[in-house]
Length: 362
Image 1 (cartoon, helix red, strand yellow):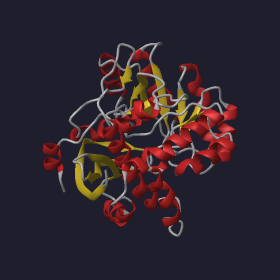
Image 2 (cartoon, one colour; image 1 turned 30 degrees about the horizontal axis):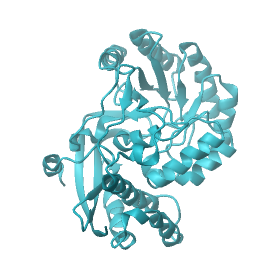
Image 3 (cartoon, helix red, strand yellow; image 1 turned 180 degrees about the horizontal axis):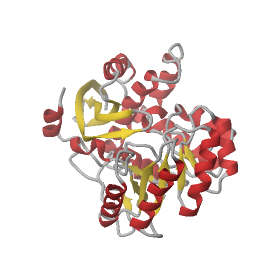
Image 4 (cartoon, one colour; image 1 turned 90 degrees about the horizontal axis):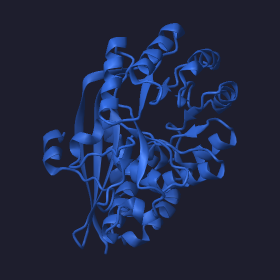
């Protein structure tokens, strides 16, 4: 089997109503480059990378197109050569930023293709450790919501079967922020896991103060309180608080994760499939976490991250963010424990819907 063509599609997925966040302002859309690797045997591998509010999406698209020569003519069974060649090709541009995002799109599609060629879900292709993965509802409980809205939305997530939810806090008015999280706890009860995300907006002192105020609410983790590159500050927080610190969604490749682990920067590492550079690097990051006895969660991309977490011995929570759902034929299903079920379908087990692509095409 040979890859004969790299095909791309751009789609714009509206986020309605817009989401107010502490770091990105108003999120109005998730805009994607869909990547297809076509073969001489009719199989097609699929991948997806994105930007928010259509910012710099053209640069991402151009980067993907410029890596075409790394995959056309490649036998998917020799897919490891993609990364081996890419590290040399990308050395001049660097191993962070748009070059790595472009690589991620190809690597995602290549793993999907290999799974389809073998007739196996990617989790089973690797060797699954579990049939389902703990997951949390992340597509709600935003800063712009009132306390009444927070409580209704949190209760609705639990009614849908989720056993974990994530809400957000800002850097100011700590008493009001704690009251918002307490309202979510009151709405879901003591048995539902709650994560709190500060979106890198706090100083270390602010984070320690609000973190200590939050500890009585029994959080599963306190996510990204300080700026992502301040590993020393993250380590100080992890040492000062009983609540686990989660971080890692903004670092690039397994080398970025290794630097965090060496700095004791977090109690939970959450690689982002796009910033890792694709599944190959995500799995390296996950195995590094295992070596350091640190749980490995995921950031976004639930339709693909599900299989990878299922195959990692230290795989932890899957972030269930529904931004990309409109372009998929299938939906993630939950079991009785609120865990995301790994499908038996080959590849990622979730495929793009051609009618939806036509609807959202740029």
